[in-house]
Length: 324
Ligand code: PBG
Image: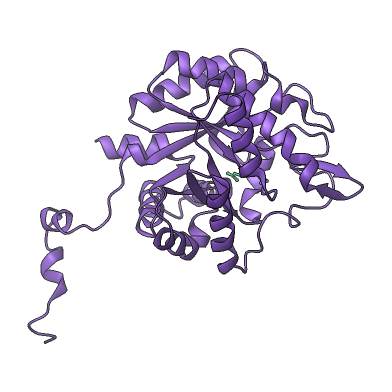
């Protein structure tokens, strides 16, 4: 056939017809808001590298969670900035730790909002690494027990879902076994299955004060050049008992999101990370791009690539626009 019979513009003539033929949708229920929780009361400290995002004391995190819930956002994911850090990351698995305290308080105030706890040690170690360190090595197997203790303590405190982001081998199996042994067989694991060693995490590390004091994370996070390896990581995490998988970052890895979505039957999420957020904010603050348009286009593209849900610092802002 072809032109002049084929005229794709016919289906673009009005918003009514565009919305009628739209293939992908975005709704607040697809979105997860990350929150950074710190000690104190009435603390709402803006993160320099992430304008519009804050370090929040538990009371303020509860207020933000309430707002997210009222906007229809599906979940919050909690990151903790502990009072003190040490070599064994004791703050991560302290039953009275900052994330444990925040999870309990948010569940009490907003029971219908899902609370996800990020499971990693890097925010709690004095050296900033994701595991136990010997010399310059991040030791895999000795780290698993600490991760498992962290996940159990978070679930006990009220977290609905635990999300290991450390990229140690075998952590999903270790966490699953520990949850089951603790009577928490009903707690799902959202595994950061394909997490790349990415420059896009820079602003997060300032927010969470979790930059490594030496070296980098390339011995455990994935090489950005690899896509097949992401499928392997996903397969292994599912065999170990992951209930959902996450790809991270999002926009630079849309091909990986698509391949994973086509391969597995479990829910697939994507993390639109701090650097992705901060780049949009920086350009928008310079008047170079239309923030709201670029925000919505980014999130829609991540959905189009195949993500069922998106962790994004824009969860509340996007939900506000979607509800108009
Ligand atoms: C590790 C963790 C990181 C992020 C989420 N979980 C940082 C890292 O691996 O250095 C990054 C998220 C973002 O950049 O928004 N606890």
